[in-house]
Length: 417
Image 1 (cartoon, rainbow, N blue to C red):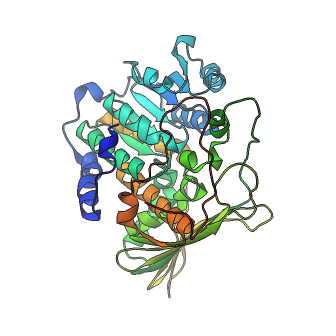
Image 2: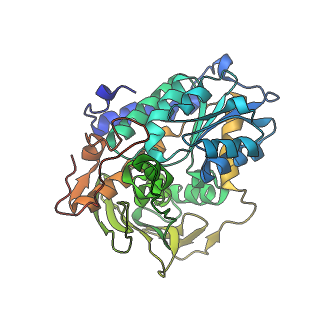
Image 3: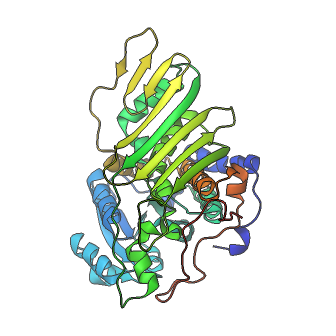
């Protein structure tokens, strides 16, 4: 990654122009012969990030199609890499640990499918390297925690399109049959012009590992990565992105402004993330999306999306409720979307018709970052400011040792640059 390129200004128009190359990659031809796997050839997976989600994604990939095998694993922590190697019967000489472990997986010539499942802050480092190495990539969402990282991801997505590489993100709702059919009906006009949207991820408190004395600050951050913005992006980015992504999918666009609020009201101890956010997002056509996410015990749960149209309403997961007409509900088989996203990607690789989801997941990631920064500052934040932000949250270097003290953002005091 060239840090000198991360801060170059990008207008909304140039962002969309550049990202159109990524979106169009599915139709590109011819497919490069050396990147194509024939139907009978194995998919050889390299797993980077061996926590619960990483191992889960690797399990899903193995279930997704025949001739799929995990052949290499990497994690910053040796214990996690070794656990994954044992689970997937990976040879010990293909089990890597340390901050540079991902490079060793990418250097393996027989690995043709890489799963990136480290904490999201590392995605703008690992994804460009994987594309440079010529690997097809499945990457968990979100894909950045700040503007510089988002720009780096978009540029790498363009390179993936040029190389005819497949890229699929962990926004599994876009591969879930019930969502696919319902959103298509919305796009076909089943509820008329869209007037507003709602998105929720309200739940009980998330896991929170205690600070361990006797180990470095860096290790404590990584072992409790969800609670540090440089690693997770805060829960509006790490988790609520799913619902935000559905709203952007329905709108076929991203918002241009965010008006947010939030706080760290219940969370105590080390860490810096908020425990609740409420954000009003505005799209270019004036449509608003009202967003809530919360992680507080003994509160009402709600993980859903809703769309209000001129001629009815919809739950994008399953239901169309048009005015004056019978309710339509999705019926039929609804395969596991966590497996289906790998099935779709492997099929695309094997038939030589690459798909590339970089643009969509970058847009949804940046939407969530825009909402976070609006809540942190207490100010309206727009799209171009978020995309072009010079605020790089990542450390200067990656090593086990001390870390600068972290602070909880306070609206009215926190500065966004």
